Image (cartoon, rainbow, N blue to C red):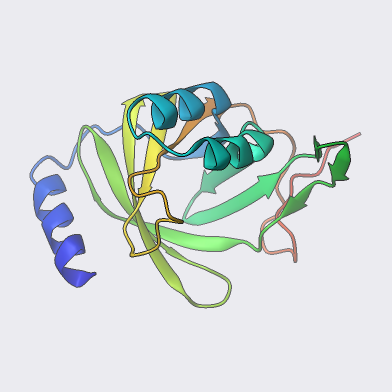
Length: 166
């Protein structure tokens, strides 16, 4: 793992300048994710079907070193999945260049995960986990698009799911 991180840092460090900003709210891009994984990665039909249930309902918000991952309410085969959020995390950008960033995220459990985000534009990116887990689908990508927040996040609360102001 350290060897992989070192290689990525060496590749990304030379141009620490104008990468698109990670700050803001991002929504899972169902269309782009399904297309890329079926066309270029040859992900199994079974895995694509599972992905199609949740894609387009997942949001990520990055703000001042804090991150929040949450799902809006959605249905799978008629069963309603209520909106929910994972516990708030903290993150640092370990390296960046014109093409993307390497993020080290510290989960609420204290576990650290490292992933690479590659920007296609200021409003689109895909993420690649930098660990041994590939869920049986090596090279799988998930795309995200920048969106307006779906509410106000209360940082430091037990759930960082955005609250609507009424």
